[in-house]
Amino acid sequence: MHILHISGAITLLAGSIFLVLGALGVVRMPDPFNRIQAGTKATTLGTILVMSGLGMLHPSWLPKLFILIFFIVITNPISSHVLARVMHNLQVPLWSKKDQLSEEEE
Amino acid sequence: MKNLFIFSVLLFSVWVLLNASIDKSILIVGGFLSIILSLLFSKNRSIFSSIKISPKSFLYFFLYIFVLLIEVIKANFDVARRVIMPTIPINPGVVEVKTKLKSPVARLILANSITLTPGTLTVDIKDETLLVHWIDVKSTDLEKTTKYIAASFEKYLEVIYG
Amino acid sequence: MVETIINISMGLIILAGLLGSVRFFIGPSIYDRVIALDVLTIISISLIALLSHVAGRALFLDIAIVYGLLSFIAVLAISRYLERGL
Image (cartoon, rainbow over all chains, first blue to last red; front, side, top):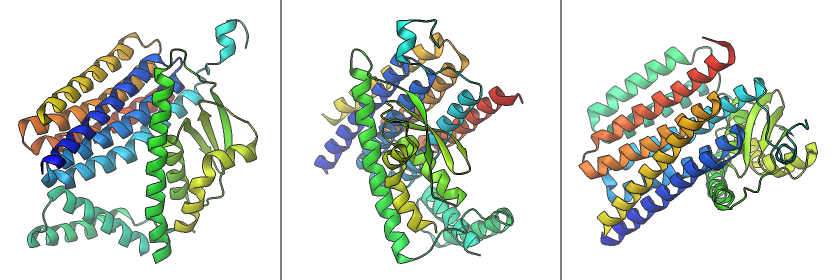
């Protein structure tokens, strides 16, 4: 019982570290497409780990946590894909190494 | 018919998980509701009818989830590595990927899986071509990108969806 | 021991929320703000689930489920509006 609690807390900690890394990626990446990449992936695994850690702490909550994980894994890629499609259709420019060297070059 | 069956099983399992009990009354009400709802909403939709129900596709479904989980974990360490570095090592670009899958649901699942794998993000689907934003472009050749990005998932999805 | 680790991870999730709000406020384009909103809602779902552990009630998990579904629809509505107007 005690071991289960400690491993649940450590899983929670790992999940929150991934959430921080995802948010840091959203702040640091240079253009909207890369921000979506960092935001989607890191936050998906972060949330899955937080929910699994809670499941280890409270085994009776597992069904609801499972539904939360299911919805997040399904909806998170779809919303980022829709945003990416909108940006692609409205021709948001991609970041490239050339831009940093000379602003004029296409 | 298969469409209706899978839809009501899905609704019923969500209902049971939400209630978190297998009381007799809850099961009866849930069964009624899921059959009525699936009759109402799956009349002209056939999104699940291309799924093959067989032991082999069931096994491949679980294998697929396992492969996806490993890819998601790899993707996270990839993102973490890129974010922590002082100068972000990226070389982004949009490449095309061709898919062999016919069924719309299989394409949807493929697109979502590509979004969750390391460094790739599905931007758009036109018929058989997927536009993929790649954070670190290694090649723009159609064959190579398809092999690198989509092949590992297509192998399993082809068995589950005919 | 367990409670200490949980407090640390709660602090980390709040830090993630603050970082997300930085992008939300300085984001040069509307897309950056929508991305930041998307990330912020997912972080808040984790925070609500963690709060349900602190309060010891499973009721908050229902709120987290509804919040997650609503935020998904919100992002879809905003992107549709950006693409062709309502």
